[in-house]
Image 1 (cartoon, each protein chain N blue to C red):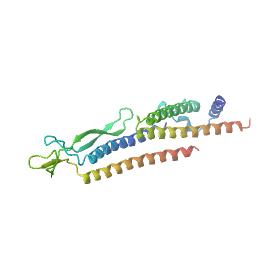
Image 2 (cartoon, each protein chain N blue to C red):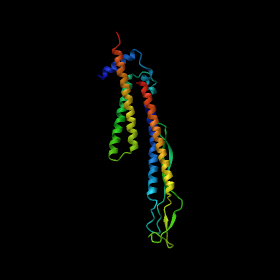
Image 3 (tube, rainbow over the protein chains, first blue to last red):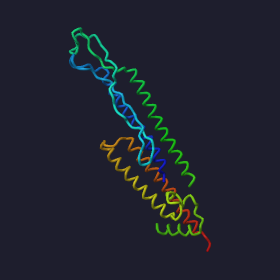
Image 4 (cartoon, rainbow over the protein chains, first blue to last red):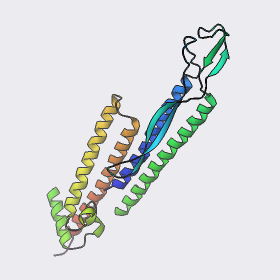
Length: 137
Length: 105
């Protein structure tokens, strides 16, 4: 009956779920932006990146989005002079995470806007369905 | 009571004035022909009950933190629109029933 509209909602919902997962990675990056290693031999926190892929639903043929994977950012770590830190090397430098909070901020905004856009699609399709139902009244 | 309504609907159908789009709702894949309004209504009702149950189950899981808000929201919104569709169709049946009962024989 209202199948096409249910599909619409599920497609947009897949977008919401994907952006939520991305938001989690951003939150983890933000939270660990200052996580230095425990010892000089260990590595600091490595930034996570969420990648998406398009998935075709075998039941209704709709093209949804899913999380392809969570990968580690390969850019090099930062360095900070902090001789008192237990993780400092012989020269007194500590490796810092390759997280740039400004970049994370941009990613967060993008994710937020994308989430909003998907919500708007849901809202619009619901309005379309309601207006059509009004024809029957 | 419900069978009364369905009788009225079938009488209405025999009178040949049931709108075409109502006859074919949900039955389009079967050629749109030969499906009574009662059967259509039945199917819509069944679908709606299924969706409502699913939404309820998800809501319960959501309370204990096992379902995501997105899942719950889409399931509940889907069930809600189905229920509204059902009530619109029900109104149509009642209207048909009243139309028939007002008919001069």
